[in-house]
Image 1 (tube, helix red, strand yellow):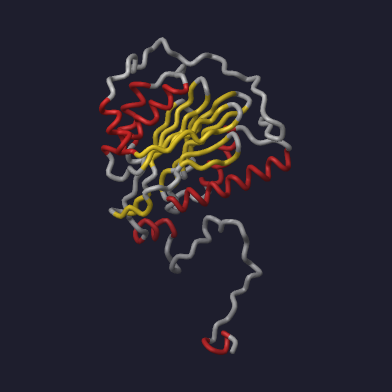
Image 2: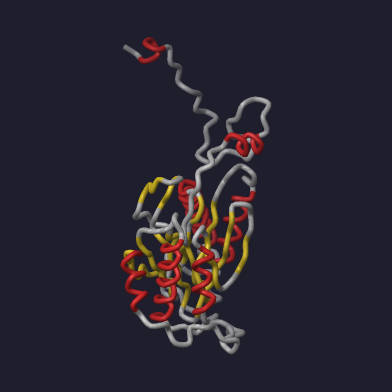
Length: 282
C-alpha cells in the first residue's frame, strides 16, 4: 500500500530546491522572530575547544593540531582530523564547530576547482582566503563558528592566512587558534624563527601542541603534523599527545629557543617556484 494512503504523507515540492546553501535570510525560525536574536537566545551553548597552529618559515608552512573533538564535557572523537587538505598545495586547520568547518571546506574545494577549470590555474593562497572570507561573511550573525588558518605555497612562496566566519582575513607568519592557543603561543613565541630547519620546525610544532594539550581540558588525543612544501603538502606524523609530552619533559631546554631580533624575514621570497604540470598558480 502506498505511503500516502497509510499516513496521509505528501511528497515535498522539489522544484524549488537547490544544491547551494540557503541565503542569509532563509533559515527556518519561528514567524516574527529575528534569526540572529533567536539563535542567540535559543541556540545550543556547548563548550568546545581545540588547539591548532600554523607558522610560515623558509622551507614552507607547518600546520599542527590535536585530534580531540569535544561536545561539552563529552569527548565525541579522540582521533579526528583537524587539518583538511584543499588541493595539492593548500590545506587548512579547523577550529570551531566541526560540521561548519567540514561543510565550508567542501564548498571551498568546489569553488576552487570550478575556478581552476574556468581559468586553467589554481588561485593563489591569498585568493583562496579572500574567497572563503567573502562567502562566510554573508552568514555573519547566524551562529556559524569557523576559524581556520589556510596554509599553502604559490608563486610568491609559502603563504599563511587566518580566516574567520565573521569575514576576518589576516596574513601572518604565526597563528594559533582554539582554546589551547594561549599555551601554544607561549611555546611558539619562544622558539619561532623564520630560518628554522625542517627538523627544528617539526619539533617546535609538536612541543607547542603537546604543552597545550597538557594544560587545556578540551585538547588532547594525538598531535597531527603537516608540512606544505614547494612540491605539495606532506603528512609528517601523528604522535600520542601524552607520550609526546612525557618525552619532552625528559629533554633539556633547547638551545637558542628565545627568538632574536636579528632573525628577520628576508625582504624577498622565492618567486620563481616551478609548479607541477596542471597545478599552476597565480
